[in-house]
Amino acid sequence: MIKEVSNTMETKEIKEIKKYDPEEYKKNALSVITFPDTKDSLLKELVQDIIPKYIDTESKEKEDVQKRFTEKSILLLRIFENESHVGLMESFTDKYQMTVREMSKTMISEFNCSNEAEKALVGLIVNAYMRVLDNSRRLDNELEGRNITHERNVYIANLSKQIDRANRQFISALLTLKQLKAPTIEMNIKANTAFVSNHQQINVNKPNENNEVK
View 1 (cartoon, one colour):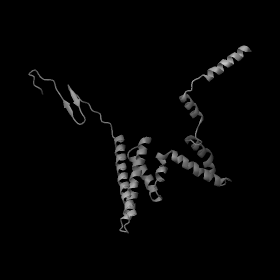
View 2 (tube, one colour; view 1 turned 90 degrees about the vertical axis):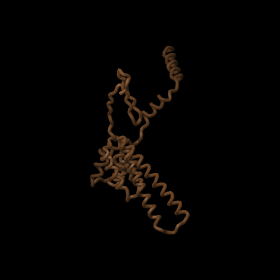
View 3 (spheres, one colour; view 1 turned 135 degrees about the vertical axis):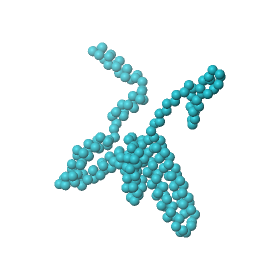
View 4 (cartoon, helix red, strand yellow; view 1 turned 180 degrees about the vertical axis):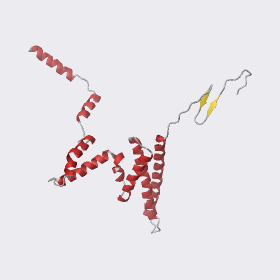
């Protein structure tokens, strides 16, 4: 009995003197903390529970199911932003939303974007392009010759800056995407001695017997 108590006290002391390891605590915490709605849980809930009730016109809880269907569908669409483009569409008014979605889908197809980074770049390109159009429309409306005021001049100046900024962002993102999609160029150089610099290649051959350099 005394031996058992002694072993218990030793085990307790070992636990108490164990050093605090922040990485271990972080790992343990993240292993038990999860978000209430994840991609897999949302898909499972929609397919197995909500959608069957949603399409059942005789369901007694039809109104509640419709509300759940809308809420969960929006959450799922936000998770798959680079495929649904919901967040990008919400950045603009109704008149531009379908244009934004169609342009994004078309560019992803044209550039054959296969990963999240490339699709995200398409989102930046479309966002910048639509801001150029939207701000250009606003600027054109202000230049119709109405009364000139200090406030209107400040507003016009800000619109011009926004158009320039969006145009630069559009070009930058588009060039970045083109570079990502550019094919890799393989070069085979055969020479006795070769010095390759940024934009030129210098070949130096060995001198012949008459000390002449070819």
